[in-house]
Image: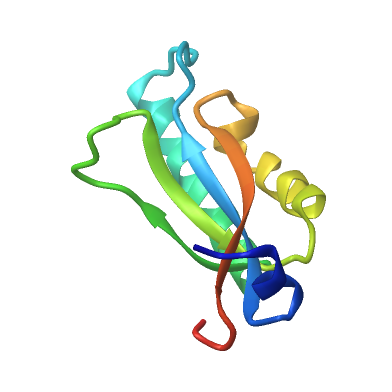
Amino acid sequence: MVSSSDIESEAFDRFEFVLLKRPANPPHFSDEELDQLQELHLAHLRAQTVAGAIRVAGPFDEQSDESLRGFSLYHTGSLERTRSLASTDPAVMAGRLEVEVMYFYCPKGTL
């Protein structure tokens, strides 16, 4: 268990964890629209990775909760900045995905 003193003593690196979820009532899209939206979504993730905001991103598979679609690990320095960047994902803007943003800690230097 991570204690606040461990975090405050800088024993951990802090990243922003973005959980991508399918909303309870997503809008309907044709197959062609879904294909185009997926291309735009992947382009957004690539652009954020190239810009240095995302460290790693990818989809989930064989999860028990099908609403959980994937995650991105950002390193922007703030939840607000990360939420802003993640919210510009075309799939999020179209209502296909929604984001949950939280801090993620790991032992310093492991990533």
